[in-house]
Image 1 (cartoon, rainbow, N blue to C red):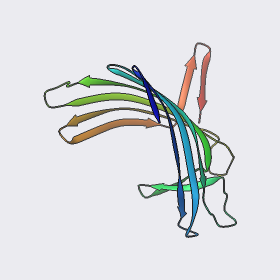
Image 2: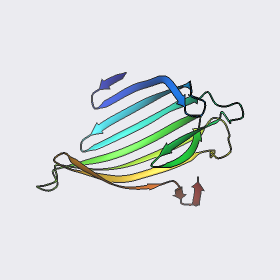
Image 3: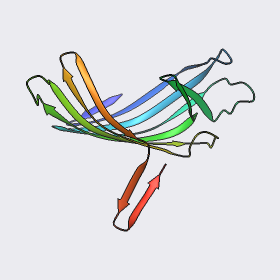
Length: 163
């Protein structure tokens, strides 16, 4: 659901479905919701989002229900089964910067995930920053990104580190 007000759009997203467990061969549930706001001030675009998710797998009796195993690129890792998340994104598009590049866009995405329950192997908070650009030529889009999982914030009096 989305409402457009001039250059700003406000939306609410929700999802619910089944969650297959390969170990138990049983189906649990998952759900998520998010509230998001986008503001376009060409060539700039600003986005803010906050929400929550819940994974409820039908685990074996001895398994920790506060975490769930994810996999990508032949690597497996645990994430919290229930968490809140907050995202901020700023991007800038460049109209045909060269004769061969049709679209060029640079962006910075900053996100925080805060689990609702503590579990071994899952942090108390995840902070991630993604800085990148994309270039499109015909049907091919290339992304160059720097992804970091540690954020350092400095003020006049000093710095702190999260992670």
